[in-house]
Image (cartoon, rainbow over all chains, first blue to last red; front, side, top):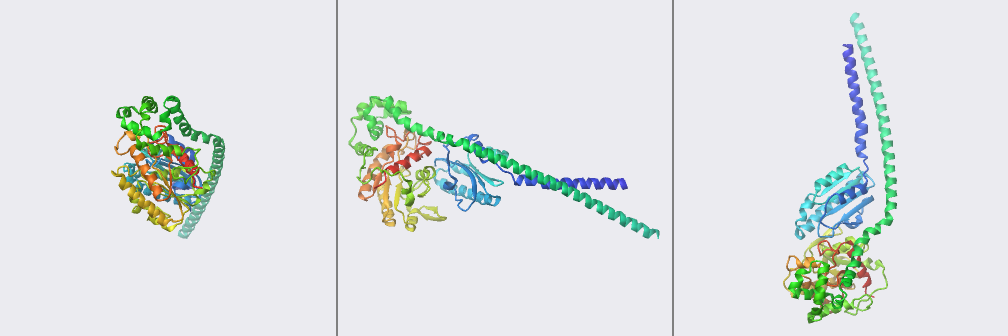
Length: 157
Length: 356
């Protein structure tokens, strides 16, 4: 009996300890993930084929983010012939990133409205637009290859 | 007695068990905290290192930035020069851009071969004789181009002149009205101080009805002009009306747009910009109605309209077209929408043609 209890106890304690450690380490690490915006934007630009000529512009010309604290950004937009676009924006906090995430989704919706009568075929890209948040950063990719974009963003560190 | 004794033993045992469990849990907690702390310190140091590396990268990249801009600019410099170098005999065609388009369109056999700059120029050599036989209709557009040579101080209206001031602050109280091409100017010119009321697909009819988002509210551009006073108004429309069959309808609607803008902004200096031409590739491909010939014809009418309405007419085609009168190859991915390098050229043209 005694031995059985002791084994039970040890197992319970070990399990509890492992659980506590996982809770402390694993989750927090994901929350604090800092992504290199240059690496992501370069990969999105170079590893995906675009129809349009994308050029780098300032984020505040494109997005309505006046009330968002942005620390770094890299944005590429097309000439107007297509909806292709890349935005990697690092905010000062997670809360600010949430606001930026909403602003990027708003941009996608506005673009859908703009392109629906102008170049309707661009709606496919916009419907499959990738908008993701990673820690303090938000990423937008409008391209013909959303799967690749998701893969790049998910693997990014 | 023995029962009582047993109960005591059990209680003691239970107490011991509880104490041991608490001790173990505390140890695990402390261990967890230590691990958590060290992970945090590690990730903090790691991030700091990353930031330092990024900063260093940025410093390293600064001098290389102009290189990326150089490529398209080199093209602009090269295209017209290449043309002239390759066609030393074709002096007529070099001095007369729009005439060539019409000539090419009149000579259908030659037109088919004008796929690349080289073949166009080869054709040009053959055509130099036809260049001298330009139709009367071509002449005003040609004069227009010649009048706007950089050294000339007066444009066709005699109202604008090349400004010595290269100061972008002129656009502080300017509003740019237009379609997707003006949207491109907004994105690529870097003119953050100016206001842009532009929308893809906008034309001289929908400008009165189509609502766009301005300062968070949906309204037409004409309504927006009634809400804020501007010192200068730049208009660039006309490409989305290429499918309209009648020039007269286009001009009639454009006249109404100018009247509405004048009513909303009575004190503003108004610039009517010509319709920017399309590339030879775009000109040749469907849709059939997308032709530089139509643009040239309508620009002549716009120039007259500007005179009639007493506003300024400026022609960005002066810096955006090649010697054949087409939008320079390399200025646009689709032959219509300008890329960054050429939007910057367009902006420079606007600065150079500020009304004194």
